[in-house]
Image 1 (cartoon, helix red, strand yellow):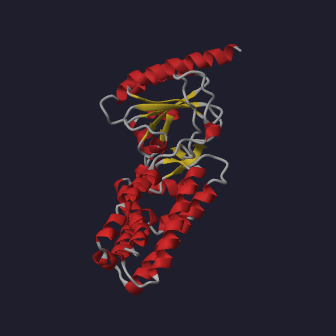
Image 2 (cartoon, one colour):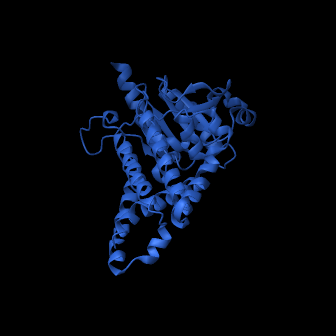
Image 3 (tube, rainbow, N blue to C red):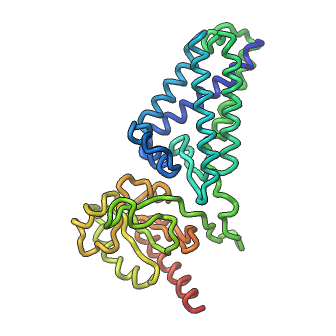
Length: 327
């Protein structure tokens, strides 16, 4: 039983690494997007780190579980280094002058990077440190599991706490409090910061504008090949006229030049989101869908999904534009 409590930290790390890896494998594009937002070295993308990272996490989880003796020390050392790196990346992200989204646990962990995120990572570093110190006893996880008596297995009821902590680790963070609008009533729209991102335009990827610029824009995500594409394109002139001076864009999941060739008459309103990163950041999960970006770098409306909801968003935005113009 004395060794049972020390089994909880590595078991927790094994669960966290496995959940993280599986989530990343399900949404590989998200890891790449997060690395771009965090402005990590381009070398990581060149080395295909977004694709390799989840497999590395799975391998590390297996090493923690299966290796005995010196191999277990190596596994705990690698896990400690990994979680220290994760902690440093989150700490650095908090120094940026814009809100960022964390994707350390794939789509499960998508949420704003806040101090809460840093605390979570500090807990993981502490657990990795305990596992590393304990690993010098030269007993692996599997061998000690086999030596547990009944009391020891009761100790491992703490694994239930492990699962609870894992849920807390990957639970989506709320936006920073400073980013929330003052609520007057329960139905008030909560404005959150526009996430950092780039879109592909006439001058090449990312050179048109950044999501965090100070212009008011309506982004309508669509697929020019879908059956409802003509209906979306037909509404564009009315939306632009209604919302002027707010700029209306149709954003597709392809490069700008590709969509321009399909719909040249809409070229001045088109933008591209080839990796789908922007749509993911803005939580638009079905097409067509739209969000409204305010001049204060906050989301002013949306996400709206389907033509009906987009029309309602445009109508509500038009009222706000009209009121602001009248002042």
